Every structure is written in C-alpha cells, then in structure tokens.
Image (cartoon, rainbow, N blue to C red; front, top):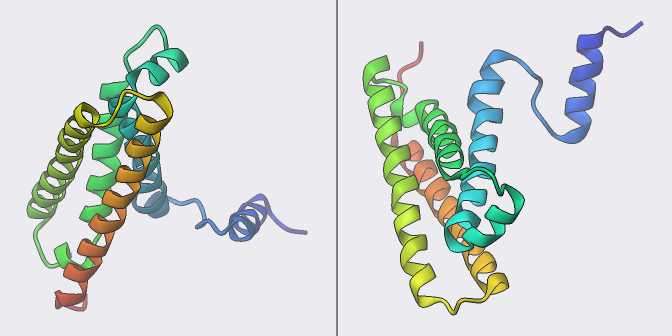
Length: 154
C-alpha cells in the first residue's frame, strides 16, 4: 500500500512539479510564486484599474513587490555562480540582484505606461509581455553567468 508521501511525490511527478520538501519550497516553489507576483506586478503598474477592480479595498502593489523580491532573491541565492561565497555575501548579492531587477522593471513599466496609449487591453498585454521578456532575459543572463562559474566540490 502506498503512503501519503508516495502519493504526493507521484502526483507532483505527474504534474511535472518537484516533490514538496524544504529545499524545493525555498528554491523552486518560492521562485515560481515570485514569477507569478512579478507578472501580476507588471499588470498592476501598467493597468492599475484592473487590479483595483480585483482588490478594491487594498493596494496590493507592495505585497506583489515583496513576493517578487523574495522569489527572485531565493532564485539567485541558490545559483551556482554564488555557491563559493559566504552566506552573507550570497544574501547580499541575491537581494541586490532581486531589488535591482524588480525596481528596474517597475521603472521600465512606468515609462512604458506613459508612452503606450491608454487602452486597458493594450496596457495589460504590454505589461505581461514585457515582464515575461525581462524574466526570460534575466534567466538567460544568470544561466550564462552560471556557465562561467567554477564551483568547488563540497
């Protein structure tokens, strides 16, 4: 008879997800949540009226930004090019990269919003499209840096 843990692993595997454990929560699922929040943030900046309709009683910008920070910081923290650094340096560099990327994106979206015609659908598409493009470029950049890193075997 299969245990509950085996059933979870089997279900995760069928869905193409990693098994649920502390390492995967921090370095797989949290970055995925960060990507979702980052994408929602792109819509929030480009089309704030849409987000206000979904959350009329609360401005969720800071919540989305915080989740984007945490997800991208954890993604960077666990990358091979930072593995040889001290824990403090890894935290410093991963937080710096996350904040720079996220706030730089917000600035790009604010500028883009000022030049794109005020059309709800167009602003939303521009926000999501540019956000996904920035994520792809950022991921490719980090993977390139990782490919140049020489890591010590522990």
